[in-house]
Length: 168
Image (tube, rainbow, N blue to C red; front, side, top):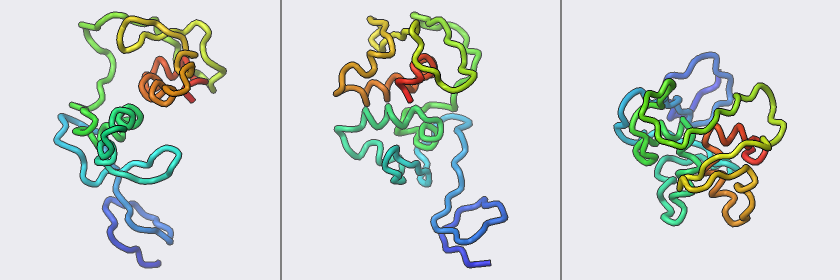
């Protein structure tokens, strides 16, 4: 076998077929309790760029903090590895969720059973301000706010299903 150059962080399971380029990091497990701070070894890959970054990247540009957190902290691996930066208090909550549940409560959209066949013509969702209920086309009607809106609302399960075409 060929030599593997450090740092290599365990556990690495065999067989490993050369060439292996360093660094090779062990996966960060999902959070199992209260956040004790960002992982010093956690990294994730940026969309469309392929660059690997750590948690500090989320806050290193003050004008992009909100957009970066909305885009990446909604992902389980990032919210777990960067729990302090993302404000993740504990492990993800699973159903059932017991009352109190604040209104409005949306009619559930069925879980997709196959590929997206387009946005639902009847689906609407309530904006964070609670004042407006909008259709999928709202996400893209202001070209200057598309990335922000998609980052904020497409991370919601019901929006990503109801607006599957727009959110993809």
